[in-house]
Length: 208
Image (tube, rainbow, N blue to C red; front, side, top):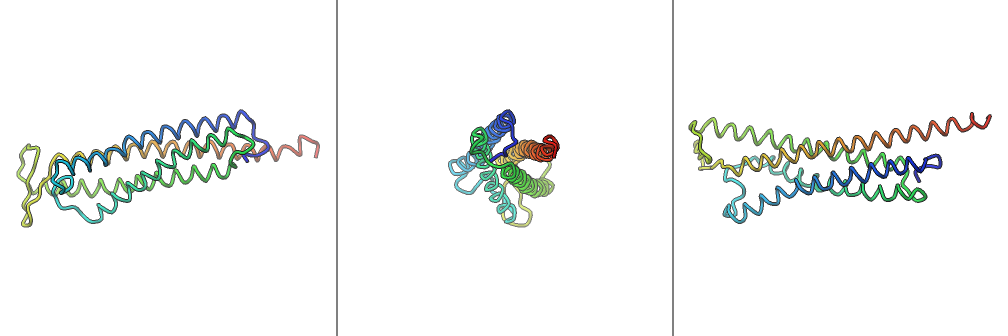
């Protein structure tokens, strides 16, 4: 229950916020999440099964990328859950409590922040590795650079830059989702404070 002192107009306002921000976060993440899938399909069809680019990559980066994709999937599902919560809020007699709404917003904030951290670490490692490759390569403006730094031949291609661009877009979307979750947390916290203030004023209003 949202609480006996919650006004129907407040229920409608909270429901609208959760529904609106949930839809925005869900579809933004669906659009961005399709980029890694498209890259995998491109790699399978045109990359000879060797993955995007043929340069060697840090094992830690691959684990971070997998973790980032899992968190992205979770925050996408969580954004959809916001829309379900909005439906329950609108049904004031069977709505969730303010504390459960706060908890849901907190989980969204934490998951989005974790995804940003993962994506930021991956971008840092990727850019560092690309910089080292290009510093060892001849200074030429070519779309594909071959590097032979005393080891197996590897290539830095436009696909590597495309992968990095996908990470940047994913990070931007996660920042947007984080802002939406923070706003929902603010709204639910303000409502929680308002309910308790109303409860405190109730005895005084009845001459207690």
